[in-house]
Image (cartoon, rainbow, N blue to C red; front, side, top):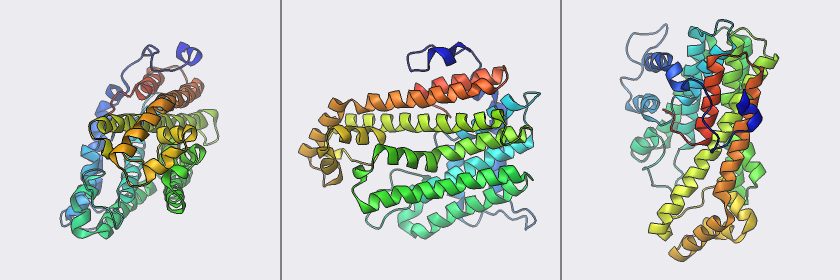
Amino acid sequence: MTLLMEGLCRDSPVPAGPDPYKLVNDDLDFIKGSIKKTLQSKKGGSSASALGSNDVLTMAAREFMQRKGKSFRPMLVLLTGRATNPDFTTDIRHSKLAVIAEMIHTASLIHADVLEEHETDTTVGTLVHQEVALDVGNKVCILAGDFLLAKAAVELSFLESSAVTEIVARGLESICEGGMRGFDSEAKAGALDRTQDEHMAVIRQSISELVGNACHSSAILSGHESTSLIALGCKEFGDSLATARQLVTEADSVEAALRKSRRNPSSFSGAPSTPLLLAAQQYPELKTMLTGEATAASAAQAAELIERAGSIEATRRLAETYAQSAAESLAVLPNSATRDALLVLCHKVVTGTPIK
């Protein structure tokens, strides 16, 4: 496994191995159907559609079908399950776990996109945020997210694994703590007064830990003890790769904002992200520029300082270190085409290759 020795970066050659998405494509199609079926049925209840009478919940279900990157978490669950199974296969429990992880993640997105009282922009965020927030208020959006969490809890009980239930529940708890931590830091001070270490802690709690716990649980469903090297290696893999992916997303987002700012300088905004926090460490005046009322002059100056700081490239290099940690954690897994596919996935993440 030469990739682990040479280091993983954007310029490194693509590792030899199958395409991770194609390897589990049929399973992912099955999972999409399972999600739709799960959200449209009431086990033990009436045969009437659980969503048919509520357009908002229908929109919540559509998040699974239209959101970019919706296959990332289910794909990781399936691939780690296959890579850790003695026969390199998965069963229905792995598919259920993949559904659960994606339900929890989607619910967190819907909850995170609830509009503040002063906000009016519904052109970004989840479908629920875009289509109903201003019409029927935040309460319905919160209920849509709660509905998904309730469905996830029901599905989790069917796995009949106390170890997996505890681990996934801890992931959900971490998402809530991460959301509150991020909100508290923004409420108590300017968004860019958060330190980079604090921001990384928010990323880990609100994004990475759920993925790591899902991969950990997938290995358990394949027959490994929760404290085994293989199960813990899968947890580290998921956690590190999810962090790398978020850092790449933040770098791409700020880079796109800079391009937009060159056309319309007053459009630049200062939502907390790694590139902005790293730039603010070098140029503290950015905190004022990006948290105050933007003008064309201040936005242009802020963009210049961010480019001068080289913080977008620094963020991409940081993402590479996390992707490398993810790749190294796979060393505990037996040789297989599936493990090779996971290495290919690490490379896709650092190069920003789109994932369905």
